[in-house]
Image (cartoon, rainbow, N blue to C red):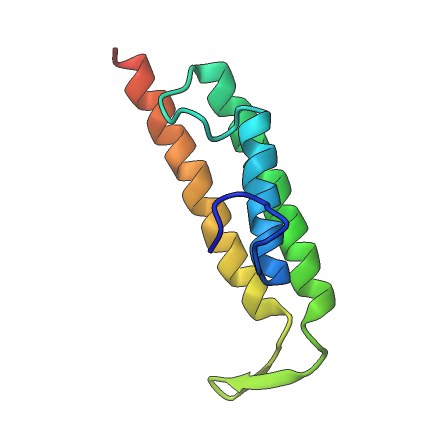
Length: 106
């Protein structure tokens, strides 16, 4: 995979999109250094939540309608990605709280 978006690179559409997203995040100093101040971490947290919301919306409109049986009960297929994304949101919230606790102890 090419490191930069160069005309000679043969990347898939998702690889190009990923590189553009990383480039934009670096441009706005969202992933440059991982030891950020509290205000930068808050900004990164809210941007992460916004990106999770975008991901959830894309998953909702991409996954087709239908149901699958889970423990004998029909469950909408669209809910499965929402549960997974919800778990990632929970992990992000807990990591932010842990970082706040670590910073308050210093």
